[in-house]
Amino acid sequence: MHDKIVGVLHELERQQDFKVLFAAESGSRAWGFASPDSDYDVRMIYVKPEAWYWSLDARQPDTFNAMLPGELDVSAWELRKTLRLFAGCNPSLNEWLGSPIIYYADPKFADEMRSLIPVYFNPVRTVHHYLALSAKALEDRQQDGTIAVKKLFYALRGLLAAMMLFE
Image 1: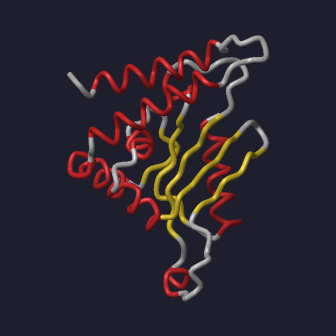
Image 2: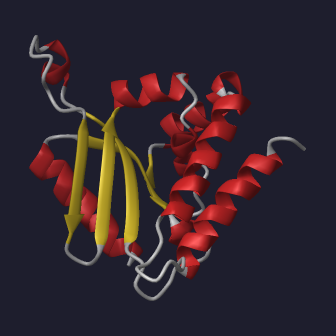
């Protein structure tokens, strides 16, 4: 599946006129508890051609999201957006950079971003992020009031991640 996803990344680069700097798996597959019906949560950082950055049109999209064939849930952020979110300590972005499943990484870019995580890391924001994820997972109940096992894992994951910040 890795090679198929890399092929999709190359096709997206051509279709969307961007260059992928980093692409990794996020979600249950990256965390080691994918279920048989899990999709592939591909998260990317991209850069546009130079002319895009010189445009005065402030309405240019800086994200790409699509559900593609093969259960590929693709979400991507343009580099400037990524850097703004990174500077504000976006825990999801930090997770992408630490994913055990990397589809593509420009080595210099990925290394530089990882080296800056301690500079921009904010434990208070991170705790709030993980507690909010846990709360959201627990709110997602089925018709009979029960919680799916996968949602329970998401809730536990958020709680445990928040607890680790206090150690």
